[in-house]
Length: 155
Picture 1 (tube, helix red, strand yellow):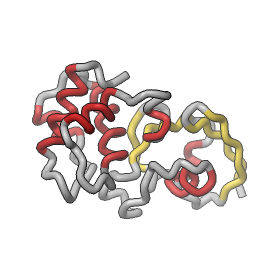
Picture 2 (cartoon, rainbow, N blue to C red):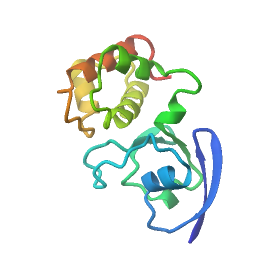
Picture 3 (cartoon, helix red, strand yellow):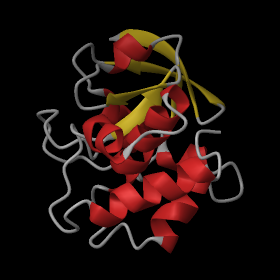
Picture 4 (cartoon, helix red, strand yellow):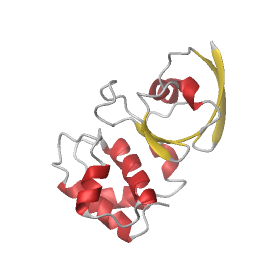
């Protein structure tokens, strides 16, 4: 067992974890952040995307011990009491259907806008390339990211 200290959505967490425990399982099972879904467990789908020290990562490809000393933001922590502009845009643009990919898409899109506040459609599609949606065809997801960008959605 390894002792880790991680700040998750502003709350400091200290735990003893197995060295092979994935961050996604730590977040869900130990911290209770079930808004981060377990998708494919192979880092292909992006459903489990969170922000680790301000950068989006697929939490099924990161060990919990690698997050030691870091700050993790999940979809639950993104809102901070009110909906984040990206969450609002996804709702307004009907950018979700089953919703399974939505947390990861939103977290990746926020990271995209933090690096490029006014991306083109092509840049949005490239920036979300590692996140798969099986329902929407991406059209409304791209519209949502464009709407959030117009409203300063990287905050």
